[in-house]
Image (tube, rainbow, N blue to C red; front, top):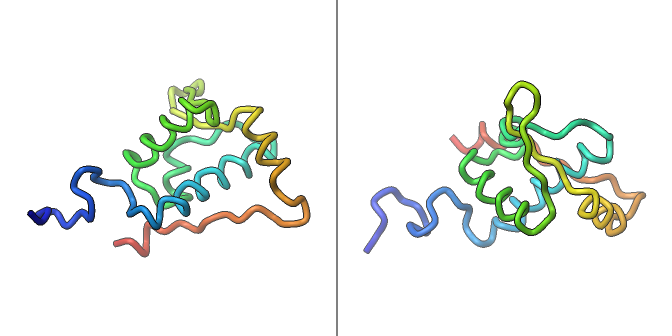
Length: 115
């Protein structure tokens, strides 16, 4: 039976198709790594949504999984805004894995093109 909303996978509304999952994962990690590499404070989820073009519900599902895996830590700042940051061990692993001569790729805001 076809899904009336047009979702490719009605069992997982809001999630990207499997072939886009790696790109989504890479985009989130790239943003969090760039924030860590510049020694900036944790990134608000709203800003992370804007930078990656993800819906908040999709981002939260991904971050919850990453937090359970020990890759990301979620917290609230002084203004009660939810934020995300890489754990030190995850940042160190990414740093070791990346060639220091290659800049980390960031993903442009895709929200305008998705409408």
